[in-house]
Image 1 (cartoon, rainbow, N blue to C red):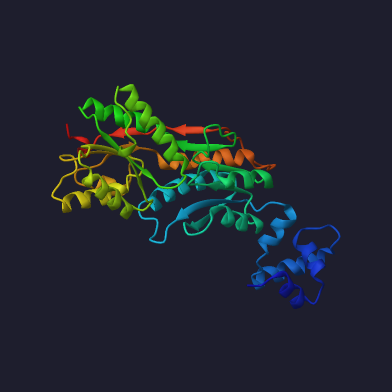
Image 2: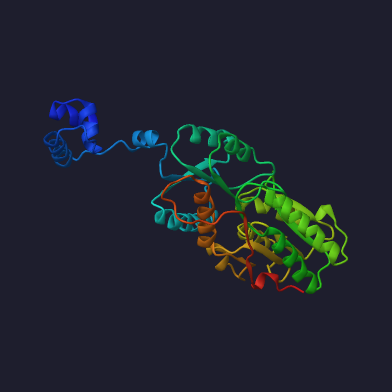
Length: 341
């Protein structure tokens, strides 16, 4: 790769003269400019984009921070890749690029983010897997870096965000199971401080009370964020003396582990346990019976994220972009997993 120093050495002229010639400065002799441009083309000169970006104060690049796990992202990767496709669609229209920044779940997300923004490689950030009072929100706000979150970090977020309607899914799932005759409904929620767990839990509890069913904290089982973690919660469910025959969950990937564990115990989803998941994925479509869950337009979620981020990035050539929060409500997909009466 030929850089500006190599080009100057080849032509035996100063780096400053080469730079001014490449940037069309009027103080360069036309013959010298022509000579520089010809040599740049012949030698395959590639400009140092990071250096140019620092001088211009912009990189025309957006970062998309996603959380990974030691065992891989499993089915969640397909969701984020489809969301990323929607983000990229909008950015391409704005002449911008997307870089995916994977943060291991073994690393502190705020520390990882601080390291990334210190390198000044992006003009704005999209962050995922938000927690209650997420420190990344405060960090980006203090640094005045434009950002948008996929998910909220509290009940009264003032920053730009896009979220899936976990509260609607919890209320709707409970109502469907109650209508089918269930009075004891378990809820499988993620461990840790994920904000979606707070939102889902509160709506689940309110839905039970609305149906005249008392809230039982023993029926709320916390699950590790990997699909294999569902086996631990499933074992706890099977050990209950009066185990519920219905359950709702925030992560449909857990259903893969549930189906496997149930069948090992001689039980069948949709027969011995009515199960409603949250997000439909490529994996859940091929379960037998299909998982009852909610369908979202993943690419549209990405487009909404990009529009809200671009709206907050000061750019002279930016097109019109929507601002403010948005909440996506999924449509229920009936599957055989919730057929138990």
